[in-house]
Image (tube, rainbow, N blue to C red):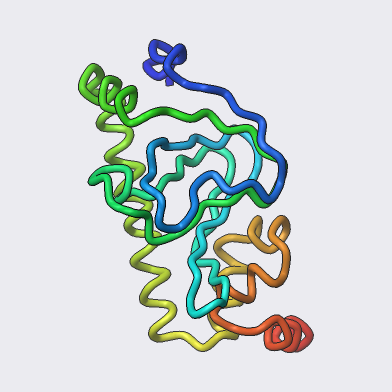
Length: 172
């Protein structure tokens, strides 16, 4: 969108290697990231076990929303899975853009609602579907996750072990 170009000077372009933590669980999110190239995952520690619960790809923005908005410690970490190019924006610059541009504010609102709908579907799927059904859903709706994300993260995302994921894949 041409409107975003008006504010390009506020963004910091960053090339980051794979396995780079953009935000650690417990830190306060000071930036929002827009992914130009690459893949990031959201994860948290559950009694020493690393749990992946969301993935982000090109064209998507990622941050710890509650932490970024309310200056609270993040409930999760953000990590690049691939060598990535991101454009970061500080909270002050983010607010400047949103306050200056009704078009961008509307665009961000639309992205937020799409993300909320995604999270709602994910939440309901975890409650009502079997691991095999969740895998089938992932295969149909989000094939790029299966193409680009290591299997152990996919297993964690589905709430199963890597061995269980292998069994499900072998049955297909």
